View 1 (tube, rainbow, N blue to C red):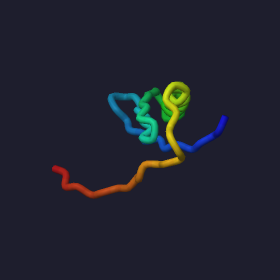
View 2: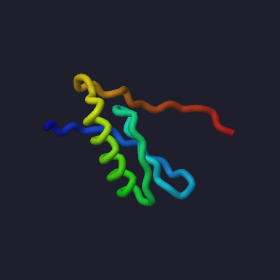
View 3: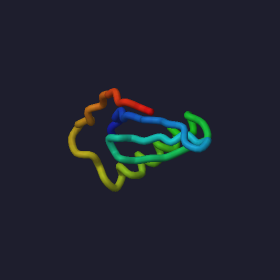
View 4: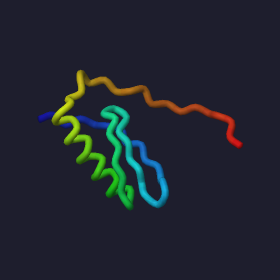
Length: 69
């Protein structure tokens, strides 16, 4: 069993923390950042048992600016 590092993107939504893993496409939530990350880890591990990722490719993560009202 290999250990791999994944990206977690977190945002606050209606009082909950929503955590998303762009590499696997998994999403979870929790009342705290720690809970959201723990739930995301569990969801990602369960997902990867059924749908393993090919290769060691990571998505390109960058930022951009946009006009806001």
